[in-house]
Length: 422
Image 1 (cartoon, rainbow, N blue to C red):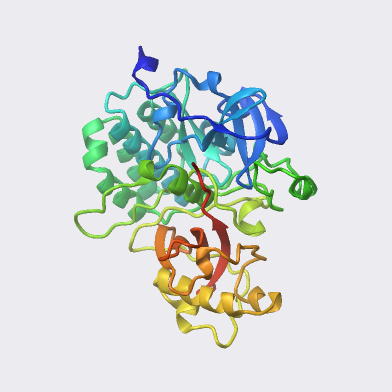
Image 2 (image 1 turned 135 degrees about the vertical axis):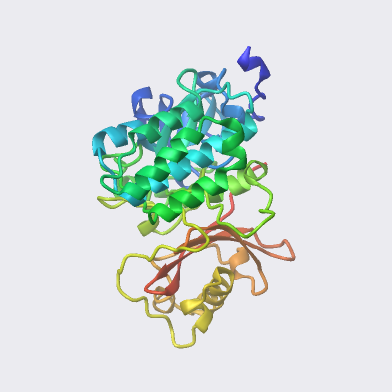
């Protein structure tokens, strides 16, 4: 009965056979399938038949995994999903006690995911499992069996152990009691988040172990990049994505699913705790963002009154002519515009090196190179901000610009063309 009420999958898009980087079984991912390259990033390719009967085609909102694309190959139609690392339950079981800030990050993610599911499916009939994407962002994944998003979230919150941090424990306990109350989760989400943010400063979720795509080496990435793949974008040197990656791709491919009305009252942060990072789905950023280090960390959810300071990795020295706004402005739009102006004016890599976190290979004909490009904030994660650059004349392709604050100075992290979906 449930499957008959769900929307049909989108129209298939013809595509050449994707290059398979790794095959995974269902225990290592929401569905068994192949890790392939999609728009320059690892994605999980699953036969469409494997997800029929789930609520995946109606998935929408923050912290709910949605399809990246549906394509046809010689093996039949495939649905593409973001790559993931592990279930949230397995992480909590492995970690035991988590830092209070991590617990806040997880709890806020669960609340937002449940709120999104409740809005999309008021009857709460869809079931599934909570997973962590490559950036450590909790995502609810629709499946054929399992608890509902709210029930699963309540179970996981019950396992969140912030140690001897009483304030965090109390806030999580209150959120646990509210997460299965449909009316309260919709009307009282802001208050619950405020209590959690007040209890402890959110931190990125630390993930140990490997991910679905983690075993893909840089050598494999480079080799794949040099292979002719007419239907797939060139694979970048780095393979693993982050929450912000997911955000950028979904904004373009599934933008209607991510739009939400602006708050009616005081401005509040509604950042997809991507905690990272929202997401779904991919903004190709610099190697530092895409390839996880031994302790891969993603941006975290923050309240409007609080921003997390970036780790001290050494001051980024900008050219003398860089506008002051790019160095210390609290306005990410002004900072991004100033950085792009100087970055585009640079005549060589040595000049640009001082303005970027790592080498950026951006389309010089993209909107980010247009002097009067319209810059719109997609997601503000405190010290990491994603913006969309659009050419007012609509001649240049739209691009996603990522800037990161280091030592109170902004630098560019990545510039990526917005994926074009027919």
